Image (cartoon, rainbow, N blue to C red; front, top):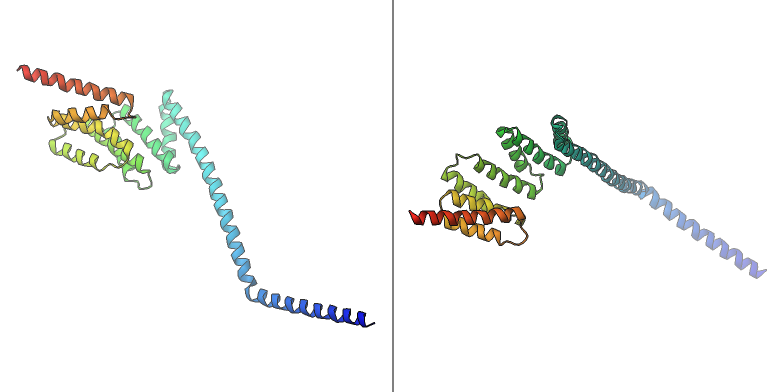
Length: 233
């Protein structure tokens, strides 16, 4: 009997302890339960938004990748109007990388139309857009300088300004390409020794484009021939 009584007391103590714990949890829940719900909701909403944004970005990337490829193929097949329409759509609404690549393609189209104004405007738009990858910005800056030189009518002051802009380039790959223009600037300024030295350095640079190396070697030969011609005078 005593044993049953002890068991009853133990069960009663356990029930009282459980009730006390439950009362404590109810009190904590009443104080902080709403905040916990809010925190969990915010975390879940944030995770859902990140997942949605990632999914939306991937979907956009696929959409504009396909659109860009269609435009590129249309240009190659001579369907210019169709291609330009698609490229302008990407420039207006697409992700920044596809927008930039589309602008470069549009520049090639403007070249074929000899539309100097649109070429200058589009290069400048790429350079001025701070969202554009620094490589593409510097590449646009380099090509803009090359285009202006190719247009002719550049004064010594213009050439000095171009050389100053080239000196500010930071991307290693773009700096290698800039050596070709730098050598040509020296050549136009009449400093054939610096031009020759720059072209030799370019031709000996590892990893440069084969066509660029051949052009550098051709300029070295040209300068050498001009020197020989001047020596005979």
